[in-house]
Amino acid sequence: MFKFLGKAFALLVLSIFFISSAQARDYKEGLDYEIRATNKTVEPEIREFFSFFCSHCFAMEKPFSQMAEFFKGKAKFIVNPVGLIGGDVGVESQKAYAVAINLEIEDELKEELFNRIHVKQDVPEDHDYFAELFESLGVPSEKYEQIYKSFVTQAKVAEYDRHTKEMKIDAVPEIVVNGKYLVKTDNLESIEDYESIVSYLLTLP
Image (cartoon, rainbow, N blue to C red):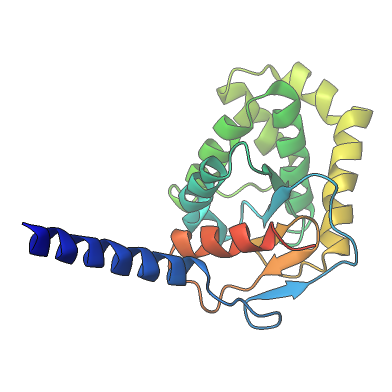
């Protein structure tokens, strides 16, 4: 019996060692992450830069939602649409997302717009497309236009653009931690790998 307990204890210690070793991976600047700012945010945050027109962003929608849930209560997860893709319609998509936040239907908008573009191949071409989309979500076009033209929406889009410029974002999707550290994805193979390096970056000064 004691021999069995001894073996069991040894296996337990060994498993803890391997788990700790995996968690204590030595991440390196330039290889696993880049520094994009001098100072970090006051509160812990994870910012996802994305475009509705980006197929990789569509593919990462569910994994990033999983990551947002993983860090709930530990860091604020912020979604930052960019106007890098789609020209004027790309900017329209930013404004649409800002309107959706105002109405607290951003999750519904993301699901519907991603599905239209990447599943149904129904790509937006103008402003009216988004007004119709919001009507399909139960928002009258008059209400959409009112919020669309508001100062709050314009300020929100300006904020998206400011963060995009400050973080030197030229491709999507990207994850930036604490407004300072950009995650490099070359060595990431799963969302768990993503969560691991983000956890590490949240501890850096």
